[in-house]
Amino acid sequence: MPLAATSLACVLVGAAIPFTPIGHLLGFTPLPPLFFAALAAMVVTYLVLVEIAKTLSYRRHLTGRPLAVPVGGPEPVVPRWATRWTHPRRGWAT
Image (cartoon, rainbow, N blue to C red; front, side):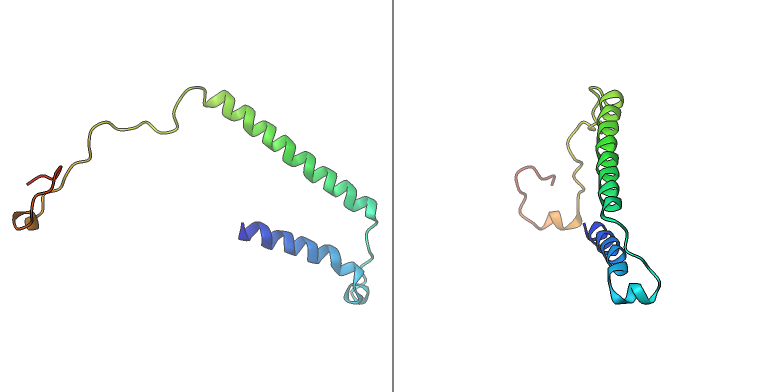
C-alpha cells in the first residue's frame, strides 16, 4: 500500500507541475484534458484485462488442486532436559 500511494503521489505531482509557475519556468506546457481522459481510460482497460487474464489463468491451471499439500501426522514433540523437573501436562511427552 505505501508503494502504491507513493507512486500515485509522484504521478500527481508530475501531472501538476506544468500547471504551476515552476512548470512555466522549466518550459512545460499543460496537457489538454482529453489526454488525461484517454490515459484514465487506458489504465482502467489495462486493469480490467489483467484481472480477466488472471482469472482465466487461475481457472485453467489450478483446477481442483490445492496450493499446498498438507503433510500428515502430528507435530513431533522434542523432549527437553527440563521436562524431568516439570509437571507433565496432557499431550506432552515425558
